[in-house]
Image (cartoon, rainbow, N blue to C red; front, side, top):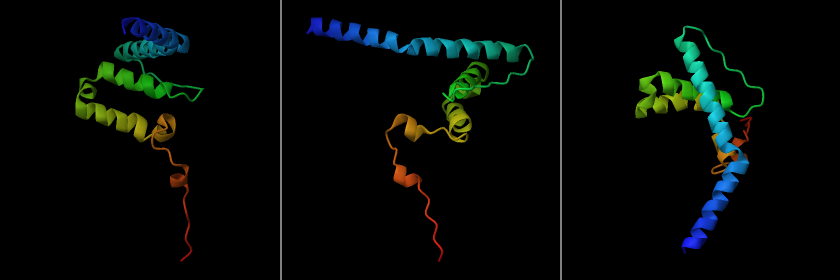
Length: 112
């Protein structure tokens, strides 16, 4: 019913706010804009992160989306994900917990 909808909707918004997820999104977008403007002014930008939360990959990807029209095409976006995430070894399976299989990561050595 309508009342349940509004209660659930309000609960969702409260949970979203308390997670500070939108703050993180805003911070990443702000850093990406700052980096893109710096690059456009002719200055090299180096991203460094100390907490291992993938924020450099996020900011770098956003900068490329801002500056490179090709990265906004389907093929360009696929290349961006491959270059910034897959090649650098982002642990998608462990972060998303959809296909993680710890036994699959074990390497067997055979002395035949």
